[in-house]
Amino acid sequence: MPPIYLDHNATTPLAAEVAEAMRACDAEGYLNPASQHQFGQRARRRIEIARDCVARVLGARIESHRADRVIFTSGGTEANNLAILGLAGDSPGHVIVSAIEHPSILGPAEHLEQRGYHVQRLPVTRDGVARLDFLRAWIRPDTRVVSLMLVNNETGVIQPVVEAANICAEHGVPFHTDAVQAVGKLSVDFTALGVTALTVTAHKFHGPRGIGVLIVRHDAPLRPILYGGFQQAGLRPGTESVTLAVGLQTALELLADNPDLPKRLRQLRDRFESNLLAKLPGAVVNGATADRAPHTSNVSFPGVDRQQLLLALDMAGVACSTGSACASGSTDPSHVLVAMGVDEAVFGSALRFSFGRGATLAEVDVAAERIIRSVNDLRAGKIR
Image (cartoon, rainbow, N blue to C red; front, top):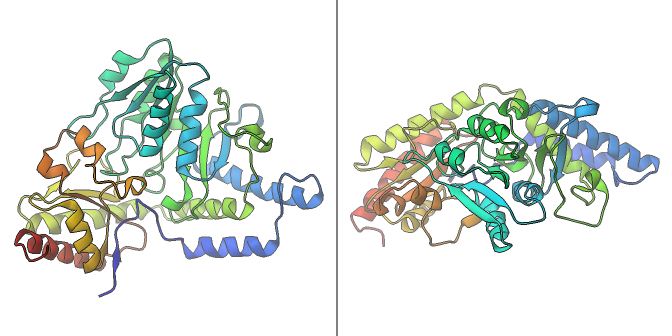
């Protein structure tokens, strides 16, 4: 049987339409968009078309006198670092992030902590939803930035970003959201969310790897974390890739042309979970009682070690993960599930399954059969 890919939260396959758009772009021979001659001007015009598309699709303001900034980066990790480090200021202050953030948020927060900043991590409910009562209690005059992801990358639980942004706005505190797992699965509108900054990366919605975006409100005080160039108003120096920008633009336009995708992803996920819960006593869907994005399923199989099951499923032709790809190889339990307060038997047996636009109901059914067989074999000691 052919292998089945259920790890779209790690990365999605490049869409054929995106690959073709990038091939055609390369054939056009675009050169350095920072050059002043006509070749550079031509490349610059194409970059700006892509930038305007990102702003339009994701709800950023594009009018000239109050235009929000669309900053191209190398991906979500760089965009998140730019948001946290760039909004935190130069001298130590107070920073709040949630305990369930992606490592690319927790990492720069820890870096700030080492530099003397006071960093607090919002706890979450057992459903995996950030506790905004703590945000209200913790926010203070020297709070520099607050960050709360829109959709958790491990459980798919949707976070109360609009409410959190409103709290921060009341206190004049910049608010950032990592929307990497939300674009293409939820409606994402930068202006409607009320955030100061928002992170997106193309390879999570069938675009190319190597390009992401940080959208920043027009009046937000952002300092660069890279130096040595004037590109993108000096906020992110370095030669921009026209080809990658076109790939990102095309992937976003495909989402706009496929509004039924979230509904289909939810159908796949619900069918998948129903199959597992019906035939595997004790299986637990983590975050199931919360509002979730439609593409992510985090399932625990008590009595089975997650690493053993991951390897068994790989041999059985099902690709999944134990959590964030950026933390792959770690033997530590998921910090997200630990923050949710689940039992050791639950976080020690949890795997993440995630779906993309190419998945089918038949494929999901076969994957569930392979998972059920592998779990039962491990529980019976047939696989060691």
